[in-house]
Length: 361
Image 1 (cartoon, rainbow, N blue to C red):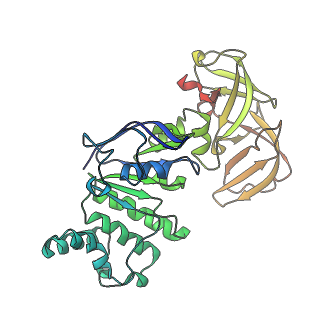
Image 2: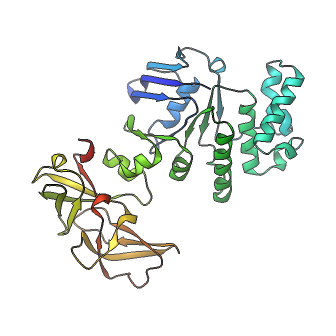
Image 3: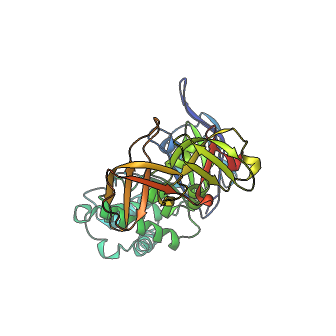
């Protein structure tokens, strides 16, 4: 329905800079997810797109038209908030139709739009109920339906599932994914702090940190090829392990001797690493494999968590670094307070220098 372009967008409150140098192209039909730590500016950026926050610098374009000074109601944008904000005395039908009635649309068109939205959201059987007779997930669908009937250019979602319990969150997340499939040409921007939502819903993820964009890419690109240590540790749960060491050999692969005594071999090519360079070795918990020969890491297990399909091993901290976490398939019993050695395939070992991935140097 619409392309969005943000060029050098910035936001400041007095002398406090919240966001700067935001450059982002969003194409029609994409579902873009903004993620980042609390206070990184993801909701602020969403509100700037909506027109609820003034842009301090740069330009926002929708379908080639600059929107910086255009009022929110004239931007062709619909926003779904954390709270459902439904009128409790109105039926589902009236809640969804309210904005259209204010716009004085003909009743026949209003009825058609409401019924179409109800069909997409599977709310047809609930149109005559009051919000208090609905579950949290159903209320959120009504809030989404109120946006759909307006046929906006862009849909904005500001942590829409944060008020739901775990089971409802999963069910509603699936419903939003199905909604996107039913509306393939709709452009959606979604803010969340939940990695599962980001990884399962997004066509691309925008990771925000330090007042700017840390990386943009598909969920798998960010997971498999993080450009920096922040993205490497922010995407994925548990976070990627980082172990410090020194490059000892280069060639078709790079060899690193870790400060803890282990040896890591990475498929990062020769030109990306210099002999003697200090680097951080990154390994995701699920890429560790127990070994008895040439371990990358050896440590004493402090705590284990058996989750059925996997067991998490939390190692005691060494050399002042964060504790290493390994995710072992199946149920691994009897490892608590024992010494365990781990290896990792060379194609799963990441190298970072000065906080940046050596693949992107």
